[in-house]
Amino acid sequence: MKHLLLLPCTLLLVPAAVQAQCTGSIDLGPDVVLCEGQTTFLTPGPGYLSYLWNDGATVPVRNEGNAGVYSCTVESFDPSVNLVVNGDFSAGATGFTSGYIPGTGGSFGLLSSEGQYAVASNASDTHTNFPPCTDHTGGGNLMVVNGAAQAGVSIWCQTITVTPGTNYAFSAWLSTMVVTNPAVLQFTINGEVLGTPFTAPSTSCTWDQFSEVWNAGTNTTAQICITNQNTQTSGNDFALDDITFSPFCTYTDTVEVFVNAYPEPELGPDQVLCGGGTVVLDATTPTVDTYIWNDGLATGPQLTVTTSGTYWVNVLAGACFGRDSVNVTFIPQPTVDLGPDLSACSGDTVTIAPFAQDAGYLWHDGSTGSAYSTTTSELVWLQLTQGPCTAADTVLVTIDPCTAVVELPNVFTPNGDGHNDQFQPIVLQGVSSLLLSIYNRWGQLVYETKGPQFAWDGRTGAGMAVSDGVYYWTLTYNGASGPGEQHGTVTLLR
Picture 1 (cartoon, rainbow, N blue to C red):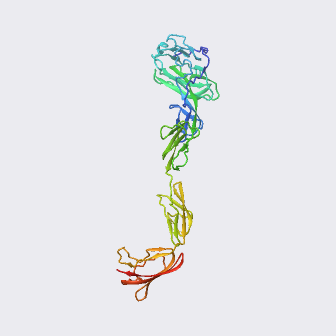
Picture 2: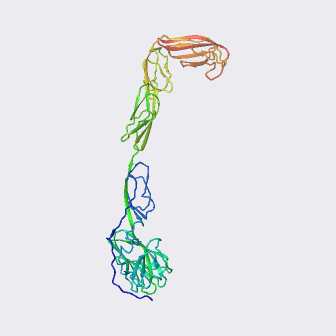
Picture 3: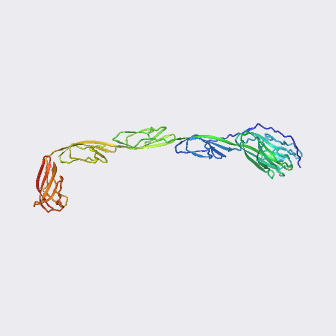
């Protein structure tokens, strides 16, 4: 049977309230410069309890391609930041207040009476009936308590400076010295109950942890107290160790993302030039600091070219890359020669037909054929085009009223061998119109034509082949000197 010994509340030496120390930091990295379409990963790193970005996102990593200022606030719990002074009792019985008193000694040792405590490295050193329990982590001190029959008496209290709005993690380890009637501890902060009553283990020298999270709200200090709700005098003996109160620290960092447009050099449209010469390609582009041309030599914004080819330039504005190319083609200057001036007789047709490969033709009358024919005196002009290149020439055509000359053959052989198959003029000059009539030996008309360029194949107008023999012809015509008439015969042999 234990005897209750009521003593006045003891006030131990307590240092000034401890200020929370969150000494960590996060790093989103240096400011980032991107090119349009590129992205970058922004993260303060893994392992934090929460992430909150300035736009409300809560992801640990984000892939961003938009310009802007990005900030992230993380919450981190660092158990190494313990705001409790001497929470492991390594400095002995100091740093806290208690409604119990230090052990006064007696027949069972230092803690022979209820309502007393002691700090020791082994519980058996404080009471002969206590087992040899050591501290929670081994090799240190623990606070051994002989519980009193009065509930609600503070066993351990400490006041800590806190930051309003911050979350804190409170933790304490509890062990039983005598298994009869284990202690029932209540934890409070600023007089408010923290969690539910916590019962000591049912076996001695076993350590159980009590832990809760507390938010400071508007408070600037936190008075943490531990009381025993068990009023039994038999048993009710316990030990405390490793009391911690650690902030959930928040850290913020900011990074700015810049997005630059890709430079767009402009070499202009493809160029085709006539003859030789030079072309200056100009790739001058705002904000560009580096030019690289296809020849690997030129590094300025301009390049002079004298030969046909495809030319390109790469430009760099910081890390942003742009490119353009252009085709430059030098075409030889075309030439055209219509020859010397031309003369012909009335009724003659003069044809001018210069030849040029892959060329376009434009004559003075607007026609575009590859040849031009005329029966009148005129100044003939031609513009020849090859690509963008042009050449021109003129020739004078003169038509004079020449004397009519008509010469016809006296024999032809329409046998289909390709030689002398038709009766047609050998010479027909100065004739503007004519009428040819052909008769057989009986004076019957077998063929007649008005065409200046006639050709009789030995058939009647109805298409019937005539027989071999001598045929008579008459030719009336109009010429430069007036009308005329000729007569003759022609022998037809098949």
